[in-house]
Length: 525
Image (cartoon, rainbow, N blue to C red; front, top):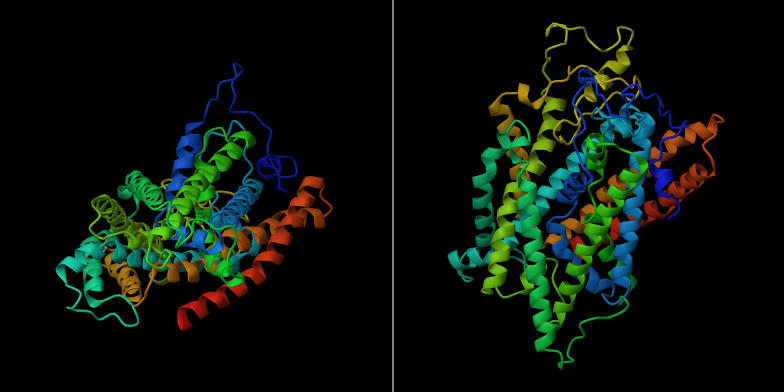
């Protein structure tokens, strides 16, 4: 990897890292100043877990098809590992950029203020913030569409039991039947009131349930696949493994599926803000262990699921591997229902961030100023009017994560909470906008044939921008200016900048080609 661990996260003089140890007592113990704000409480284990809860989800059910298309014996696993390596490097670029904006040291004890969108704003200004805001909104809505399609697939045994195949069979061209969609919408109706929640804090325990369900599903897939290979090892109709893809188009079809499995970049700065003793070594170990943990799980699901193609009538697996198993398989029924429950409860995690962005943008109301609260405003009086909206807009992260919040990249000082928060809007307004987002996603999902269509469109365009292109552009904008102005960044930084430019040269044409291929598959396949 071109950008080494120390290069990505090591604080240095060029990064503006302060070396003062005012918070360290003579005996070496840290003596935090309680007036500085909330303290960092995150361990490496909790930081890794928080990122994995965001990263690992229903998208892994499409990996078996991606492995089969690219060659599950060699090329597919190599493609997964390459995606993981590039993703890990992008994580490090994001951390390096945010640490440049808000320098930290080994003994930093106060929660950080940086976020993904504040990085974009520091690199590109107000337009960068606006673009990032709506990019995250689009990804949340796309994710809700994908989860609605996934929920419909998981509920298929129930919908088939309630609506026999000859009743309400409205599927066109192999698409979903009316019965399937009605069952999906009935379950979404149950979770709709949660879209009026003020924030995500009441759903913080959902991560453990989601991870448990995904692990159960992965174990069931691996067990049934191994059972299939043992029982049918003498049959040669369909090979369980192949080394290479059949065509270049198969690689293009699989590329967005690999990308979608690693999307969690917007949460990296927020989790880093909470990490205790954020030394370069600890940050590097956190990022590396997180990527490796996810990749090992993805590798197991991809290999086991793709090998099950040997036991299907066509020799191929579908975009949702669970659809290839018998509906009355008791083991898979348990797995389906566990995952269906967590997918259902995950809708607010996607809807509420998008809803809050819309509320702050379209239904802004004057919030209480710090003067009204009895204290002076932390926004300097000389702040130009052109920057006031930006300072207010950066008060709250696009995707809330507990106490994480963004900060003004120009002033580099935390601002007073003057932007209207979601809590300041009425329940009726919060619920109304949330319903509009959720049911728009459900309506789109009702006409989508397969889950891989959603991941294909999302992974080929928006996810590439969020995961690879925007971090690369921001890294160049933030660190490149130092070299342009004669700063001494060192050879490693120059090499990392060259690698970031190479990422842009590779992923821009790849995104264009992959997006065209995704639309072709959606419209003409």
